[in-house]
Image (cartoon, rainbow, N blue to C red; front, top):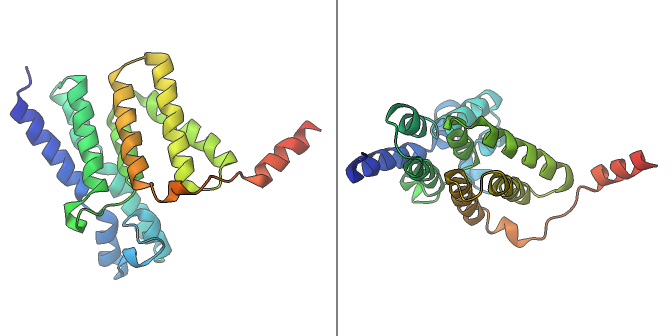
Length: 206
């Protein structure tokens, strides 16, 4: 039986690892730049790329993905925690990234760490479903924020349909809630269609 203090310790460890702003640190170490001075000021891998470091971008993204893996994987594969505890640990890692104490509780969009959490789970099809829905959204929607939300919403719908009220659905719902908060300002604008893709599809029908 899992004790409450064990859940608390592992969740806090996942939170603090998730809170590590690796992209900011990579920007300082390898580029000598403050990446939050680029783009929208987001402390994520995209701004490492904008700062001019392609290799540093790859490193930053891999580190941001990796920080969502260890404690989620250990929680279910090594310690054998109940599924809902794994959900708490996974969401803790994402919350750490989204509201990092290292950055004054102003973290990144947390997409990379969210992918890391999904990759750490034994159910690979959830991550694959997310990729499929993100790709579909990318083909028809212009704005990145709406692509993210559409991808996670589609995955949530898939999980509800195929698994009902499962812990996977709860996890995806929690992820969607956090990402909606982090993308809230961008979501205030109505999503626009990718006209070129639609025009190409219409031409293929003729």
